[in-house]
Amino acid sequence: MNVAALLFGVGLSAALCGLASPASAFEREWHLGAGAGVSSGNGLKLSPAVAAYAAYGLSDVFDARVEVTARGYHIGSEQNPNALSAMAGVAYKVDVLRWVPWAGVYAGYLVFLDEPRPELSFARRDLALGLGLGLDYGFSRNWGAGVTLRFDNSLTSSSTSTFDALLRAEYRWGW
Image 1 (cartoon, rainbow, N blue to C red):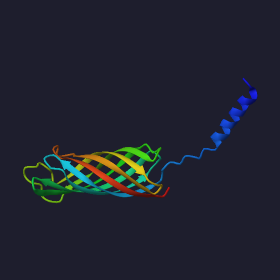
Image 2: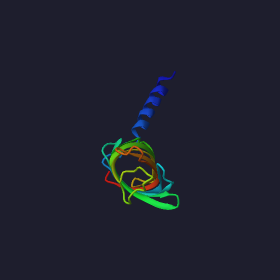
Image 3: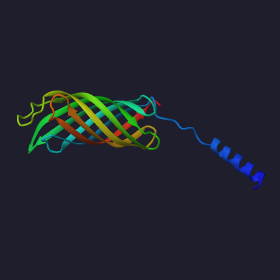
Image 4: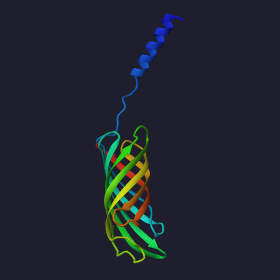
């Protein structure tokens, strides 16, 4: 083997490695967004849901999140009960490409704005725990879109659980 060719190959490799641009994570970044989709729950039909959320990048892998979701549940042809939830939590994300999968845990409060119908064993107000899964896509450094699935379960009324599937759009800043 030619020593000059070997040294040239090693030198060229070192030079090319030095040309790589530095990677930058999305820590200390703010997210503000909204979503729309569907919701369902025990004894309820698929119903419309809308949400607003904010997030802050605690590190390049963890976000603190706050979400407010409004749901207009349907039972048969009637719309009842309407519900509102406010949840706060922490999400773990894999932020390495334009596609960003994430999973989060939430705690919060669930309020039915209308008195729940007697055949449903929902509490009017309840504390809740939630689990969220999502996949976001960054169109640019500032704009993204994604899909999220969230499961919420009340702490005192074992029969109260909800499921949301939302398409979302967000604006990001502060990196």
